[in-house]
Image 1: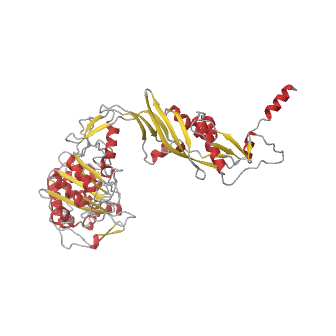
Image 2: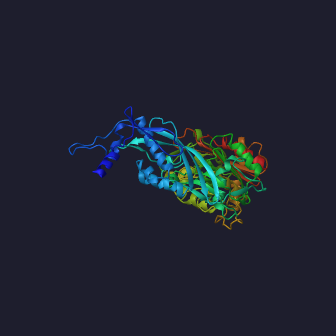
Image 3: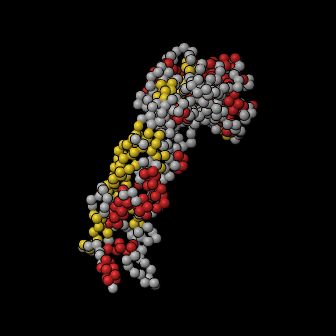
Length: 557
């Protein structure tokens, strides 16, 4: 009896009921508020009997303020106390929550976590985090804000935290994780050709290039990685081109030094020029060596100058002209057809504004950028002739350039019928970027393809791409004559006015589906410099990309 009485007395202990609600103090540092539970909350503890023929009622409808606050408070209290399993149980995905919260301590090395609840806004609850990141002998404070959303579980109506990795840190996507340790790659100190330091602050376009240099040369340049808390991306984030992100630097790494071929004056000028035109990009190379002297993009988040993949429009006619000259299908000063229209592969091609040149020479057609003058020769060509010319003479489309950072080497796929005809004028499947087209002008100027490079191959012993053959002396001489005439009297003349000396150029406009204006292209050389640029959705190349390229040729001269 005594035992039963004591058991009964213990069973009578109840929380105090105030105004129909139960007031419960939530323990743990960082919390001084009271959480209010509804009267029915004790049902989760099995305190209410349900008859065999009566189904338990499932609560539906919007969450009350009390349910939202209570759920959030329970989750944060357990997390702060290090009770990972209990915290995970308050979420709608306990397994994922447990993994992320365990990693927060084990992999991210976060300790002394203090969580402070903010003012709920409907079912969304903000909170702040104050903690320390401790790795070996290094310790730094960590503070940030996050938030969670409380939802009602459909099966039983229970309020739970809607689990996503972003609850732990707002920069996390599901599948990502937080890790503290040595950064994956040591930093690098990149230098221009004169020994000056290159930085994003000084040259806005260089962000992707500097990242590429660190990835390629960080370890072999003699640097030492620093200690960082960073977001390590999962598969889904990487598929969206999101890279790992540093959240807290515990110790700085020791950078290695990498010297580039960039010319500080030309790079500064290139940055200034692209800032004048939205969606513009430009690249400058030394024709005799392939050294990259400048590269700039109006949109610095992506290196279009090196990695862009765009139809080059009529600048492709430089390569096509070299092919026609070699095969004897054209000659600079001989008559060449330029009709208003030409049909090939069931496509009807035309010139800009449907112009025609009667009894004109090939030089005149090239200078005015007559489409039909080139497509009219398609029936006399094999499907792979243009592809071979681009690869064997100009070093394009072989996917073997090694410039020192990521780049796209251009593409001239073998095509047939109308698509082959379109390729002759830089449409169809042909794809290039400013570096590719600067290299085309450089090949014309020097007579030999020199693969562009940003870091000397002597640094790491890499092999540069080579072309398997060169143009004949007669073809090369005529091609230079065509580009020189275009710079003086053709579609490039306005942009190239004031560019003195030995110079040549070619304009281009590439139609793109869904764009009102074409992409404007321009490629040119002067002396030992070669450059090319594009202005996406800009219009005619002579009016948009032309002034950018011409200004850099003047600067470098």
